[in-house]
Length: 415
Image (cartoon, rainbow, N blue to C red; front, side, top):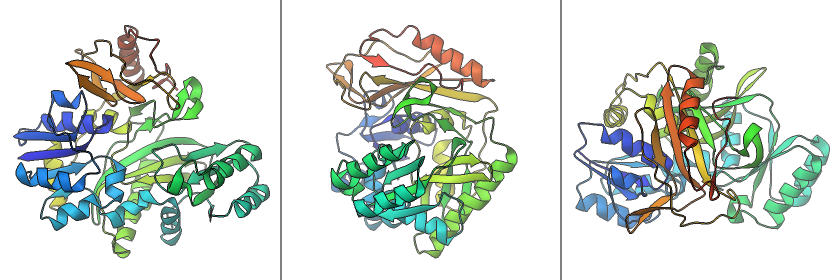
């Protein structure tokens, strides 16, 4: 089969590496890809938002299946366009992707279908939002309604922080249209975890749990990022908690989307928090999580291409998982998630016997690997214990040169 993966980040590199193991995949392509993806697939320099270009490429290369990684093209309707062109695609339609594309839609949907989540209110008026914060107090959570590349969420510890977040989003327009509407939520206390599933209509096939760390620095301090590392599975999530999350959250969501006429096909991601009352939804994504994918897919024993084909055909893929753990630590450009330098030459980093490298923000220039984003690489490892997996990663990272240009957290998998 000829397969195309749309995207350029670490999530897409992980998908590509797993698909490269499949004996069913004859030709593997990525668009636009990155410096690491080029080692496993033929990269076409087509932007992920250039849907016309991607459709033309899929037709010219007789692509049998396209997998879409990032959220932006999903919310622009790339799956609809591929389907209209008669091309097989594993991705939610624009109508289904709204579950991630609009936090207010997601909250209203959860309320309607009795899916456990935090109390909330939606605002477009700064004055109304400020009054609500004065009434509710802090801590409280402020979210931009639309897509903000993982940066449109402020967990405000004080009322002042919350009011500043409202001003930044609704007055200063820090997130442009994505922040023209905001959702203000009750703060939920507990440990977070992620649960992804392959979904087709009413059929839900959950993956193992994962936990990522969004804060830039050790001990979960500093600004929120797209994710500084992750591990899977999560040992403190019990079988009962997992069963509740699958039945009362993922399955209810798939069923509710069918009722809404927004049948879901693709990856449904639930960002969850374990409260005293059980798991609650923080957010939904409608694609593989990043960096969770980088530690979940290495534990999958199935042929990923066959999983996609089975799910699309309505067959149970009978997912099988390794019994151990996987930990991944992100190497980021100094200054991320703020201003950082690009086009920094990367030190030599290659997978070893017991570790692997996933490229996120890299590019090849004159056969040299250069940084091309805030999150540059992820170093991952598998082991029988979570601590051992983390230790393998950190032993590898001890040899990282060019430390003046990059940084990483030293506590992933150890919290």
